Every structure is written in C-alpha cells, then in structure tokens.
Length: 113
Ligand code: SF4
Image (cartoon, rainbow, N blue to C red; front, side):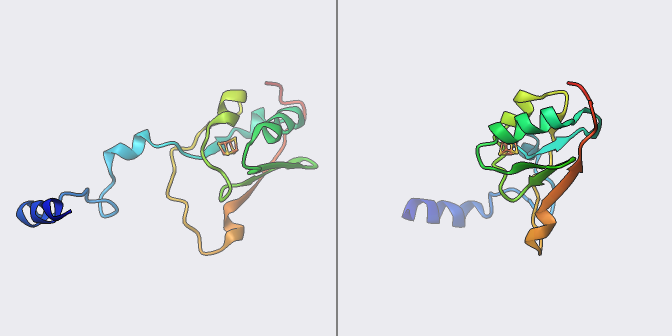
C-alpha cells in the first residue's frame, strides 16, 4: 500500500482522462443490445424474453419491453437472434428517472428471422 502511495506521488495521475475524453478501451466493453424493429416479431420476442437471465426483456401484446436497467449486457439475446439484435455500443446509461430506462419496442407482424 505504501509503495503505491509513493509511486503515485512520484508519477502523478496515471488514470485515463475519462469522462473528459472518451477512453479507447470503451469500444471493447460489453453493452446492452439494440433491436432491429423490422426483424422483431412475436416469435422472436418470446424467444428473447425466455432466454434473458435477468428478466430485462418481457413481451406485452405487440410490444417487446426492454428494461435497460436490468440488463447485464450478457449478449445471450444477440447470440439467439443476431438478425434482430445487435450490440448497442452504448454503456453510459445514467438516467434521473427509472422509467427512462424502460424501452418499448413495437413488434412487427411476421417479421421472420
Ligand atoms: S444482453 Fe443479456 S441481460 Fe441484456 S437483454 Fe440481452 S439477454 Fe437480457
């Protein structure tokens, strides 16, 4: 512990400049999914909701409800339906209201997969 303290005093700040500047390593981080509306039908939505381990996805009539606040960015949904789900690339998801983290995605009838 003392060694790190002394090293810090000698070298100064060695952390990244984030959030003042984007950090290049952010491109490698797992991120919540984004959904392609045209490829999301009821069958695909049901499949995605069934495999989501954190229950971030649920299906209501004609709508896929995505709770971004519950998503762990595990990637299972993208693996299950790569034509309908993609990596969003966004990890800065702070919101002042919990409701702002819940997205409602209309389903497309017979989108196919
Ligand atoms: S990335 Fe994982 S936790 Fe997030 S919605 Fe997809 S399956 Fe659920």
